[in-house]
Length: 213
Image (cartoon, rainbow, N blue to C red):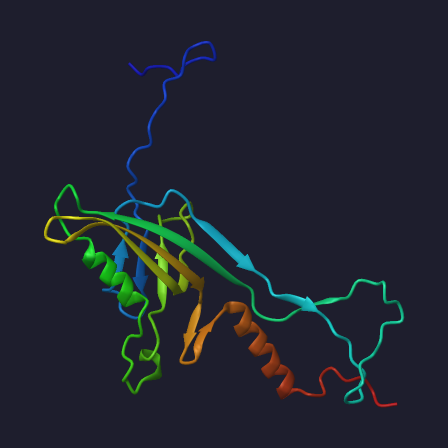
């Protein structure tokens, strides 16, 4: 017989969290075999999105002449000076104390993900760090996959055995969103759209001009 839920007058028992079935993972999109799966999921994730707004400086058509606002007290207009980008910081704990296993293999994989693939390669796509993806959960209710590059990696070792084998480490990984990679760096979706718009404008320079007077 199923036990009914407690009413408001009955004491409610505290229930602990069940172990997570889905583990956070960081994997390479350039080499699918290279990935790191969290031993323990992080207790929290913070995703920051920066939108680069700047003050719009209106200028006269004549070179070297800046147009002055007739009403200096008016708030200056803003313009988008770059493509919006998201960043995320992930803290991962690796613990091999109970099994007496080294955590160094996981740390090395993170270091490989954040390192240049092949500095001496002729292919420019190999002369950059890995294009990565962060996943956690699946389906519509899971977190959206986060395509990114690793901006920084910090490793703190906190436990060793008597032979000097690292048994516990905390790795802090900071990633920056990158939807598409180019030989010169990352390209976001917004930046791709901006480039497409500029190409259309350059192909039709008279599209926005009015009739001649």
